[in-house]
Image (cartoon, rainbow, N blue to C red; front, side, top):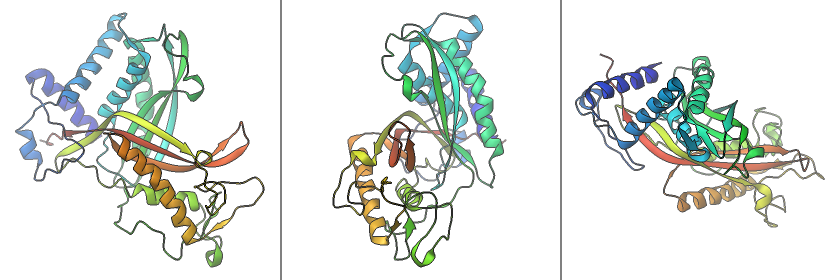
Length: 339
């Protein structure tokens, strides 16, 4: 895999010559950075150096069976950063992504994690993560981001926790990069969609486009807001310090909405799947965008992804629509020439 070659080559050069690589910020739009130009101007960013050092430290701790530890939250965040650095290329984006989740066990003592434990998770899950890339179809493909987090049911009271935790490794990948067209941020007059269950279009488009529904269409439309986060020619991109904001329909009451209860589509237990009109689609779309704008205005990080999905809540035996908005720091690393 080209990305893996670039990373390995970068580490070898760094170790041998202490040459460095520049990082880009959210609004960087430099042009004309060809591979030839980049190859002559290596300057390692602080994040590049930190990631190389962390990888070496994990490996050394594992080989030497040292007792060096990190606090749990810091350990998982740094592990996620390193996974993104070594296995992801976020230079591409799409309105359609694939999410895969793996689970690994992590031993914790007094809220601290051995670096050798982190190395074990990294090495044991890496083949499975990279197998996603190898199984992707399409002439363009990439692993977009990786996030390693403690399972939801175990996230409280961890400051002094001792025992085994389940860690979820969540990957987002692109199997066929679809261009994000600069179409208007509205649904047109043909946008009659069933609310849920991937039932497709309704009205005189009845049951066409099965596998899509109101929620999936809003999700794709919202993703067009992400746009191009690219770092310029000759660079690949990775994320660090990924954070997640989560909202569900039941948190956002709105009696004037099309469903008369919540600002987003919501599956009521007393009615069937409804046909949502174009005006109603645009109403829901703009209400989701309000949350997107709220997150964007409340953080210095960059929004890197949004998923507007339907989810089943087993405790209350109901389905809801939920928005998950991810933000992160964006980093750029020069690609080494093939020669």
